[in-house]
Image (cartoon, rainbow, N blue to C red; front, side):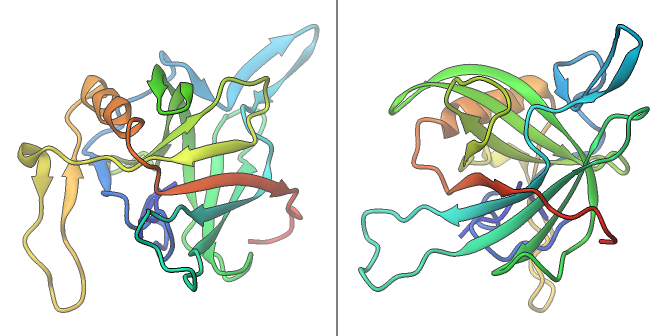
Length: 216
């Protein structure tokens, strides 16, 4: 199944639920400081820093089975670690591990971007994109959450379908894939997210607890 938030996702080693998501990529970052992004810089009453929409620490991504799953099936699980880059330059540091929270993959700097709202199968959803990497270009994982107070502790990992004209790739090279979905603009990414929110998600992404800030 898909693995994003992502090599994603959401770049990063893709071995679990998010790896089945289409790899969404733009040749330059679609979102910047003019958009609603997190971490968000703040300065108030002599204090300053980076405000996060999500708690820092370990997140667990668990595959969502379809109706044809067998009773003996075990869901794929991947761990995502989200940390703070700093207090002057606001960004997340995101990496992944398959199976257990160890043996972390490649580290990416990232922003969480607000895409808007839509109606899902269970009611209103807030749509987000995890924008990973800045140069050359960015990759995206599409997420949704039910409206709630901050911080957000649970997301759905969405399952976008790449339009035919956006598909890129030169065919497999031995066991390695070259295909990805080339996203042309913000509006296109938002359309993908709205359409994906109407389908069964690939996985859930839920906060588990803090991670020690030592080494990688």
